[in-house]
Image (tube, rainbow, N blue to C red; front, side):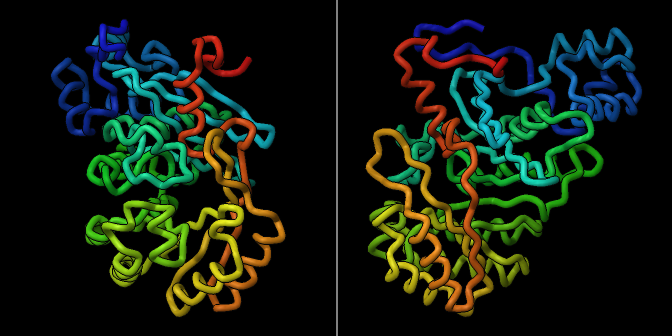
Length: 369
């Protein structure tokens, strides 16, 4: 692929293999003179045996492998950069066919292997502390590009290990790209044409788009919902999450209540703690009162500092005090352990550093040696 005058990369004429539906792939295999069971073989290879190319699919006929290679690609993105933190967290920068970059993160915790995926190039929600939205939103990801992040993460795992959980909590507002996201997740969770992951192991995060929350609830899925709250009052949330001025905290909470009522799935409230800004005792008290009596769980996230932004990480004693105060209202609280700080694991940081590098050599390309 070569860049044109616009600086973008020309799209490959080949189609990503899982940009096609299972039915489309079956039709293609049949049109090329092969039996339907070959589709299952292709899927087994791509999902579970981690080939580097179609040539690796050794139990397929040679002519089928050649036709696959001529018309399809295994992945919808290319691995542009991989960073590995001391705690084992993998941060991937993936380059889309149009030259745009997205991020995903693979985290290990005991037997869990969780991949955090993106749904957009950039983000349009404008959260003031987040690196993802510093350049705004450029476009939605296709279903294939969303799905591809799971496959790319799976490629990094040793034989015998698989991705066990997905959090849709990377770049972008998840519900702003709901249709493509659902196509990708349905494929991931399909026992016949996907990875067979349980829907209950998928969490979808949103800043809180009430109509889309209710639309998701009506889809009859079992995905967990995480609402990025970040503030317990309208005034502070307007400051930290500017889109709240058009939505309102009350409307977000009412939609989340509806999600629980319709699906029976407990809602998690994500709360990024910013040192000295939203981590004071009065904020904890307000949050506890806001969620008291709701079937809710609070996930406190100590801030990962972003270069060029003025926000600070909270002190450990402030996190402990905040936790105790919220729990005093009968609300369950966990504190997220920070992973990957050394590799810019916060959403959007790696892409920002990569794209702002003065020289191409300033950032390593490809997996570490």
